[in-house]
Length: 321
Image (cartoon, rainbow, N blue to C red; front, top):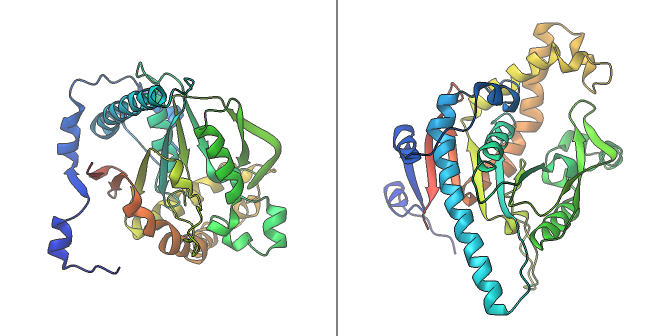
């Protein structure tokens, strides 16, 4: 059913409650700050600056909210187990983090991991990125998909679903493949283990993208079916492009100079050529993926964090219960 309402009415019936930065920061209450400047320096991603003030204003209230959600879910799980007369098991609370390239997903994921692991009921927090579930370059080249890397068809979706299904079933020692941004490929034989954590954070571009609905009514699992809570990092397209180009130019002076780097050829060209190349890659690959596959999933999140020009979160939208 196609329901189209006037903009004013859409805002009234929105499933989200919107907070300004100051309104959201006030929800921190007395949550203590457990990170230091040194912690943040280790956590933040390249060209994604984050300050202690940002952690206090945005991520401490979020960690407080998530600790409440996790505790409630843990209580519901135990009550359900008693009702079903089932053996007690441990099922991780799974948080998905989605958003465009250069939106700051990695930094958000690592900050949340650090904060949530300091809550008494969630001491074990693991983090997995969906990059490891990309098809290896050899497969992408064979299928003529290298220019579609990051698009839904470039992932081994079945493997990702199996991984999350096993994690949510409470299995021990579930392994996920590892991706190297240096060589721009999945690392053969290398895995990261997930062993029944209290919380698992899953970070990736398209983690909120639904599968095509079956016509026969048979169940088709979505990646997000396994999420208990989902966060979307949002920013204007112009800002995302600017941040992507800045990161590209910084990498020219750092990682791209490594002889093992897939992008080492870009370390040898002029600044003007490099900047033009970065803009071209953005418009050829990242922007179409954002418009076609990433941005349309924003309304499926439970929390939308909107960034301004300085990388600061300026607005928070929380889905109503």
